[in-house]
Image (cartoon, rainbow, N blue to C red; front, side):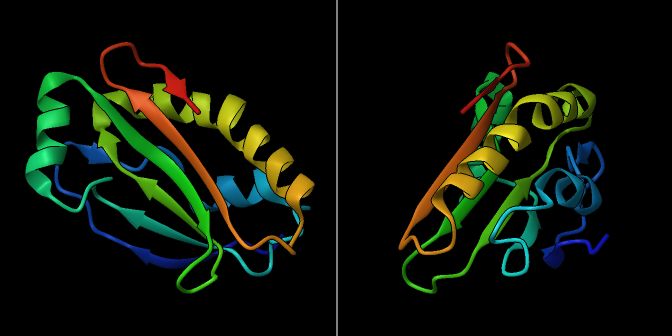
Length: 133
């Protein structure tokens, strides 16, 4: 099986982990019409400003763990995977595999490749350990 191309993968500091990898995402999304066009980007945080992101971590807030975007200005399919505190990795991973990726695959199959925009965001609650879409 061909693995979805990784655009970039930021090195993580101690205590952070990516909740899922490119191989697992590729396995779950095989068969979508966008497969040959989509790329994955792994980043440390879901916010540009570290202070906002660190505040969410400190307060046990919600962090985005997986996003998919297509639209202006570049019209490129991209999956963003954001890190989680390492102690949340297994819980987040299980929910991404069981809930998030099946729903994402279904939505991508339904819209096809002729759409002008698409947004999909999965957030993980640090307080409850649950994912919302």
